[in-house]
Figure 1 (cartoon, rainbow, N blue to C red):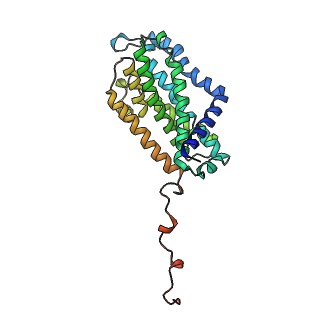
Figure 2: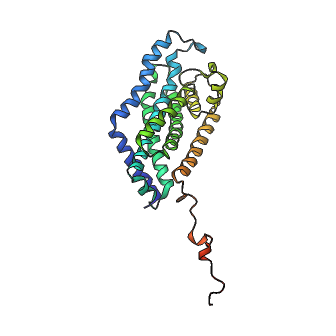
Figure 3: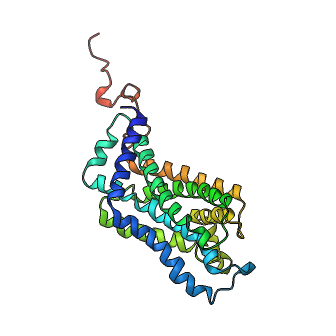
Length: 273
């Protein structure tokens, strides 16, 4: 079985599983719209932002990222299901090996995250001026955001062995990532410690890139944001690979002929020639 066919099979399987979980998909879409409509409407009356922008327009890039973040990271629960029921062991034992499994899982999670974020993105004209160029740039930012979020979700799921553990841990990870990112309020008003955490938070760069797309005030250059998200994806992939394979069965596997002989395998000097 080729690596490409293995990746395709895993992606198709995970996407079919995700589309059958309609309640989770709908919940992932309702969450950002609730923040935009209910919280955003109330905050419009009290929030005073730079440039006279409304709170709903300010928070819109953040809720797009929110939809993508939750969709991509929660899709990693499929990995925990497969580990709990023994399917993951069979996948890792396939000829394509662990890298193909990780790539397939990451692509599927990124597709789910991108789709959920894109649905929210389509409503941009109702909130703020959104020319076609802004929507295209938003799709580019969304693709990078979904890829990095997918790898973060897999990193969380890499060593968890039950769905209950995943549900508890993922919420502890998701909400700090979201709230310390500038998605829902400017980071400029945060205490210095939280601002420092925001600068190393990958979601901060996801939101900042989305703000670039909508020509809102930003903290970082687009180049820095792209490099930060690319680095996050690569580093998270490497760490996930190590955690997926703690016994080094598939990463750095040695050829048996290259292994040093043990004491019992050493030839005896008094053995007959």
